[in-house]
Image (tube, rainbow, N blue to C red; front, top):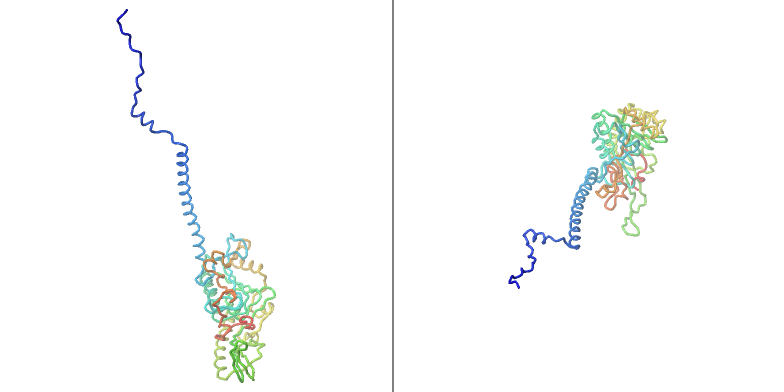
Length: 390
């Protein structure tokens, strides 16, 4: 036998583990939940940032129309935003239309009427705000029985200032009625046209009515019966200048002293009115006083008497206005102040600039204008005041 010891059986040595192996082992693939949570968190953060950015942009974009609307709403609650009335809004030539509709009051401080009207000061301000680059001319759209002397003269003076400042024309289109203050306010215009079937005139001044209770025997203030009881009745009186200005008035009574005082004031205003129309319409003042008086005239007679320059419907008038302004009628837009938009209404606008809403649309706290219904000032007005005051 051999004494040699057999070599031991081969064995496997343990593997050699390095630091890099440990690090690799620690970076195991995340589980399904962790993967989903991580992706969701990232997506949510991204959406949140995107939403925030869009909100900021949307807020800025929302501010733009609000700021624009604020710039078109006056402190008196009127919208000055413009809308096309005739022609294409993208036209090169631009005419500015201003409406004089209803009785002419001075401004918003006078209250309201039972019917729609116009504020002379606001209309004058529209004219004063216009520069050469804002429009190529102005057209006044008139349908009024007249109104206060102050409001009517404010418009007339503003027409002259606009003409002198810009060198551009002001044309008038009578759309049914231009009486008293309508004639006064538009006399300085470069040309006056009337639509078919219109009435123009009533150059006169009126003051009243003044009421008198004759032979009062009782007064009462009960809910059932209120008022004054007389045996001589109740009379009303108007003072006027201009032949026929108080036509239809069945009552007359006043002391000689009152009559003298008020008629002196009326004579001054009437003389101013006649001189104003005579100067701007190239008419004879004596003819106005002695022949035209305070009567209204149809289109043909109004033109014969020098009150208008012709008869045109609205389409013809706008075409004439564009032509006189040196514009191409086919490439001209006539713009006018529009009624308030929904956003402007939320910002306090209730009417277009220059216009006066009826009392019924103004809400509580508004009273009928004392200028018309309280005999506080002479008027250049034609027609029954009951139609205005109720």
